[in-house]
Image (tube, rainbow, N blue to C red; front, side, top):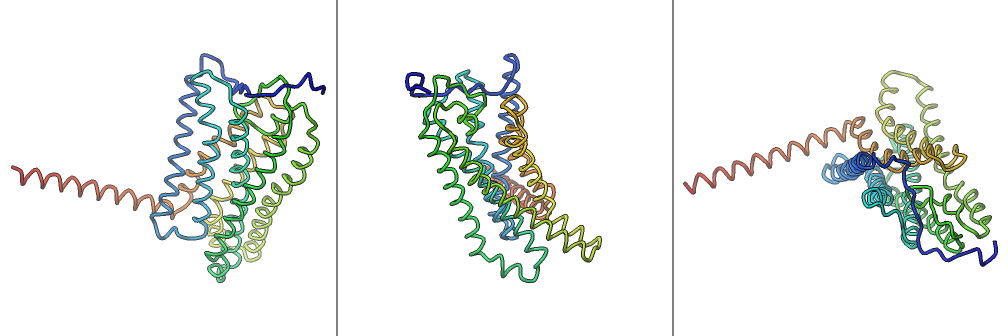
Length: 325
């Protein structure tokens, strides 16, 4: 495109969700409740893992990082969406859009890597139970999490820097509720062939490699279990892997709906994005708390401690009031 048809974009216009004007308040309340549930639910998971020594295992160490990543992923997009719904100010600055894009890619890819790490952890726990503590040492767990963070940061930085070099046309309207990479590329007036090449090569590798680790781990687990099938082994495997399998299905299912099975950005794709960025992080704490016996026991112990401290403080208050009389 010719230079005179290009302009320096200082801000973008987020069209947001396709909600009728009269129902903005209802959806604002709904998404605010979902966001608060996401934050409080995942914070509770992190708190329980920190407080209960029985949860100081590799699986829950990875889960605490996944919970933090889920909080961050929702916090990147949902507060801005809620503010736009409440104030009707749909603009976002260029810098704010780039900032949102970077952290959205970072925490989205971090979820992907952590799910693969957790799948490998389940594989070792079921297929090599006698060597589990030796293989999944604290050093290896720390290395896997640190590596996931580093690769996610570099991955997000690459795509952000490749986007920053592009020019944008006068049309600055984003048909979405956040700054998504694919939508921003469609607004660019520059040549985006390099961006698409990196997305399909580097991005494809970093998406399908963790997915292959997840599939390979569970195929191996299934092979080991079915080799000597028994009801006890099946129930143990399901109790061990059920929560992770549910989260993996939810994560990759919604992600595929957003980026692989959508032809153009319409209302269906935006709904799929809501599932990926809002619903999935909200459901993860419920999935783990409902299926994990350890989380249930830790929650019960925490509630008992709160009740004990409450009654103890009440008894102390009564005793003080009695001495004053």
